Amino acid sequence: MALRAVRSLAILSNPLRTYSTSGPLVNVSINEKTGIATATLQRPPVNSLNLELLTELCTTLEQLEKNKSRGLILTSSSNTVFSAGLDIYEMYKPNMDRYKQFWTTLQQTWINLYGSSYPTVAVVNGHAPAGGCLLALSCEYRIMLNNFTIGLNETKLGMIAPTWFAASMRNAIGTRQTELALITGNLFTTDEALKIGLVDEVVQSKNEALEKAGKFFDKFKRIPPHARTMTKTSLRGADIQALVKSRNEEMNKLTAFINDPKLQEAIGMYLESLKQKQNK
Ligand SMILES: CCCCCCCCCCCC/C=C/CC(=O)SCCNC(=O)CCNC(=O)[C@H](O)C(C)(C)COP(=O)(O)OP(=O)(O)OC[C@H]1O[C@@H](n2cnc3c(N)ncnc32)[C@H](O)[C@@H]1OP(=O)(O)O
Image 1 (cartoon, rainbow, N blue to C red):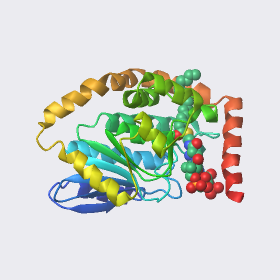
Image 2 (image 1 turned 180 degrees about the vertical axis):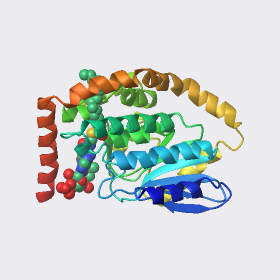
Image 3 (image 1 turned 60 degrees about the vertical axis):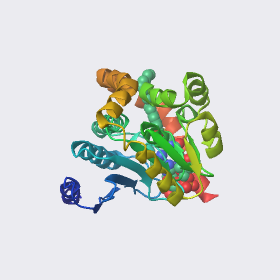
């Protein structure tokens, strides 16, 4: 697996070729004409974000930054799930060393994606609960297919959406809507999400979404990249700096939080309910 990842990254660092690298968990392809990269999450069945997937995504984002990418489309290989959010097994009776690595990688992935200098579009071609919604919110533009749900539903699981999850949502839909969304742990239908600005466009097919994404990137053809990037930093930089400053403190709090027996019991029951659903 390590060898494959290294080979993928070597190809990724050649900006002159059209290429498609199929890492085990994130497929990256770059359009030769536009220079736009598409990163497709491919961890069946539901693209839950475990340490390995996050590590690949985080490295991909770093590499795109290094190569001065023209833009990124983030999407899923599934037809029904964009991402089911954090892999709940990473939080259930966790090995603490792995858990710390998992959380640090999640933090870094958000920092890289939310603060990327290149434009980003999420093609949300399926459900996007919790961490899946966070990934979409970290992009600059969200195009969602109809008949799915999206939102930060952590409270429904007895968990708390960290401040930077909330900040990502607040920057998209404002403080009032974010407070309501977070305290209720609401999962919005595509149309509801469009209404409150949680997504920017609703489409019927992935092809249509990709076309619309192209139109979003076209908007930057005549905009000097440094002006674009500095504007983005002026709007998102403070939230990123807040996490950079508090990441160790967050880790300490989280370590205590995740080991709470009541929380572990709740997570166990939630996992069971997901399994039961399948048996119905
Ligand atoms: C005190 C101060 C503290 C300050 C610090 C901050 C505190 C922080 C607290 C911690 C923060 C925690 C943040 C969490 C964010 C998250 O992302 S939690 C994850 C939330 N995700 C969900 O709730 C989604 C659950 N999944 C679904 O709803 C559905 O699976 C789906 C709608 C995505 C897809 O449905 P469907 O296509 O019908 O698939 P299923 O049959 O449901 O699932 C198939 C298969 O996948 C397993 N699975 C689903 N989701 C997950 C997941 N997130 N993780 C792991 N596994 C998942 C599901 O169990 C099935 O498995 P089996 O086939 O039965 O084995």
